[in-house]
Length: 161
Image (cartoon, rainbow, N blue to C red; front, side):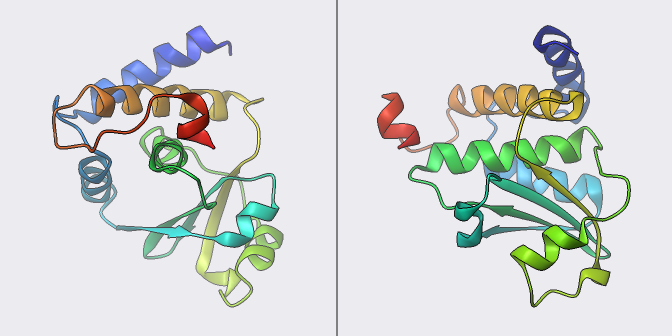
């Protein structure tokens, strides 16, 4: 899949998700919890700063957990979370479970509680490309929204550190 195809998949998924014009990260979070019928917990995990990963989605029996690396800006944090939310919207998952990943990042968590773990480290496969395209579209919707987002610097270095 090329990026143009990924954007088509993302546009279709975004339309089906049915966001209002004034979207925020919080609104997307709440709507996704309602659609999935389960809590989605967001956790900053400092251990991810040592990995090539910046985001991980854990599908547990009774909730979803999105782990994200510490970031220097709210915009970067939002993009990581939107990427993981996009996997949920697109209904992506991994075949089987990634117990080694779970044990290395969360040694106190019982790996049996994690049904699937989806971790992003590159954009080389179709699922990652489509999720990033959808995350970009959701971020654009949030940026263009008047729903009370605080102003952020637009200089690349200030935004992404």
